[in-house]
Length: 513
Image (cartoon, rainbow, N blue to C red; front, side, top):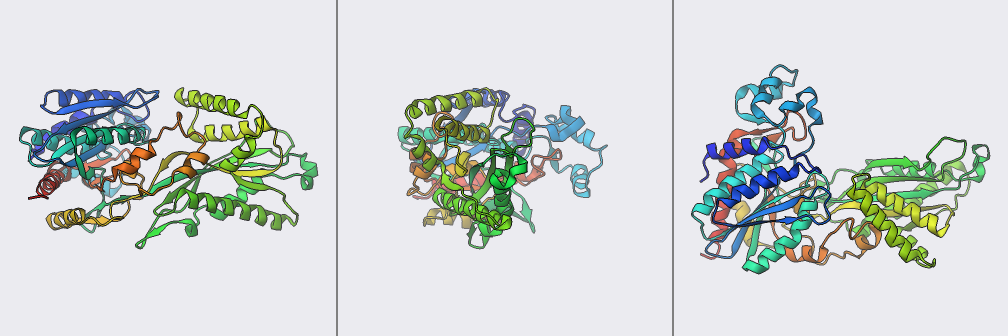
C-alpha cells in the first residue's frame, strides 16, 4: 500500500503548481505528470486537446497486469481561479503559508476548528481535486513496482472546471487504448472530493446530465408611444423566465432523488444604445439538469413553455401576440431555402470558432450571434422565439442502468470495508457523464440544434456510446471546494482512500479467480 507520507509529498508538490483552469498554466502540471511517469516502467503518453487555444493535453499512464481486466483512475488537474482568496492570493498554492495567514482571519467555527486541529490541508486544489489525484498517483506508483492481476490506467484531464475538453478528448483515447492493448474497462474511479453525512462518506454511481438551452426572441420594435402596435421581446422572455425559474415541476426524478431546479444563467437584450424604441431582440440561457430526460424531451418542454409564455403575456395584455415558436433546426430549414445560405453559414461558424479560440467570446454568446446572423441573412423580421442548445453538453450517466453483478458486488465490498454511502446521482456535473451514456442515445437532436456542433465544440458521440464503463465518484473527504477555505482531510486522502483503491484493484483482478 502507498505510504501516507508519500501521498502527502505528492499532494504538496501538486498544490504548489498553479494550474488554473482554461489557461496555459494547466500545462505546468501536465509536465509534472509526464516527468513522474518517465521514471517508471509503464506505458505513458499524452494526447493534445484538438484546436485548444491553451494547448492542453490529456496525460495517461498504463500498467499491464496479468489480465486484461482494467481499473481506471481518473482525475482532473485543473483548479478554479484564486479570486476568492482576496489578499491571500499569493498564498493560495502554498498550504503552509496559507494556513499561517488564515489563522489571523475571521472565519466560521467549523473552519477554525479544522485549521487548529492539524487534521486538514488547506490550499487551492487540495480537495478539488489534487487530493484524489495524488492518492491515485501514489497507488499507481506503488502498483507499478509489483503489478497484480488487474491492469491499471491513470488518466489526468485538463479543463474539467470549464467545458470538459479534456474528457471529450479522452473518449477517443480510451477506445484506442482498449483496442490496442485488448483491455476490458471494468471500473472507473473518479476521485472527486466527497462529503460526509452522519459519519459516512457519500459516493456516487451516476452523474447528472446538463443541457444549456438558449431562447432567442425577436419582437416587433416600435416607438414606445405606439406600444400596442409592437411586441416587446423582453416581455416574452421575462414571462418565460418567471414561469420556469426554480420551477420544481421541470426537474427530473429518479428513485426519490431530484435534480436541482432550472436556473437562468444569462439574459441580455441586443440593443447597443439607448433610444425610445422597443428592443428588437433578446436572448437568455438556461441551466437544465437531467437524469432521464433526453434532448428531445428538453426541446419539447422549452418549446411548450415558450408558447405558454407568449399566451400568458397576451392574456395579461389583453391582446393577441402573433409570434412563431420554433427550434433552431426549424429555423435552419427555413434559412436553407435562401440562395447562398450554406456558404454564408459555414463562414459564420468559422468566425465563431476564431472568436472562441481567441478567448473573446463564450459558447452562449456565439450561439446567440449565429441566430442573429441567420435572421439578418434571411431578412426574416417577423416576431419569433427560437430555442437552440449551447455547449457544454453533459449526458446523464448511470452505472446501475444495466444489471452488473460484478459492479454491485464491488459496492457491497466497499460498503463493508469503510463507512461509505452510495447514492445514485452526483448533482454537481462531472467528467463521468462521458463514461456510460445510453447506447441507444439518439444524437440527432443535439447535432441539429447545437449550432456550434463540430469544429467549435468537437464531440465523438459514436465513440462515447462504445465505452460503457461503470464508474463511481469516490474520493477523499473535502470541504469548501472553490472557496478560499478549500481543504482536504489528511487521514482520508493519505490512508482511507488509498486503502479503498487497493481493494478495488484486488477485487477486479480476482474476478475470474
